[in-house]
Every structure is written in structure tokens, then in C-alpha cells.
Amino acid sequence: MDDSTKNLIQGHIETNEVCLFMKGTPDAPQCGFSMAVSNMLKILEVNYKGINVLESQSLREGIKEFSDWPTIPQVYIKGEFVGGCDIVKEMYENGELKKVLEDKGINFKK
Image (cartoon, rainbow, N blue to C red; front, side, top):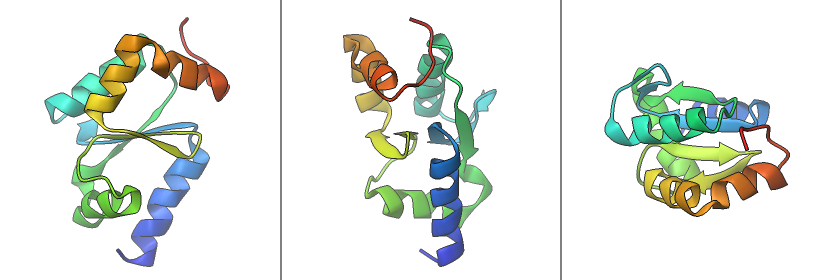
């Protein structure tokens, strides 16, 4: 991955408390997994930044290398990689996602 892609990814993660690297946008997801994660965050009324990896092939491949995670979407909370759709869905269902948000001081609907 080139430095500009790495810096772009790092910048998004550092400047947004909750960051969702996804296919499409929060208002128009381009895959079911991205839509699922986006919807969970919307239900919790989390203020998050959606980054469309389809806009750039280097970003799409770079985020996988950056996180050492092979799939998209990817969620970061306060700079920490949380996981992809399956992990976030499981955390949402068992209440762990709310706990992480609370522990990190992120506002959400309780």
C-alpha cells in the first residue's frame, strides 16, 4: 500500500470516533453486509463516518492490508479495529457493541 492511501485511512480513523469502511455510502449501501452494519449503527443513533471504498481501488485494497482483515465492511471505534459484519452483528445482538460504545464515551441511543 502506498503512503498516501495509508495516510488517508489513518486520517479517517483518527478524525472520526466511529468509522465504517463500506461499499457505498450510509444512505446508499452497495452491498448487504455494508447495509447491515450501517443499519445497526443508525438504529443505535451513532454518529459515524461512512467511507466508500468503491471510490478507489487503492483504498479498497489498502483497508484490507491496513487492518489485516480480508473483508469489507470494517468498523473502527476510537481508532481501534472492531471487526466486520459478522462480528459487529454478534456484538450488536449480545449487547457488547453498546458496552464498547459506552466504554469509549461514544453517544448512542440506549
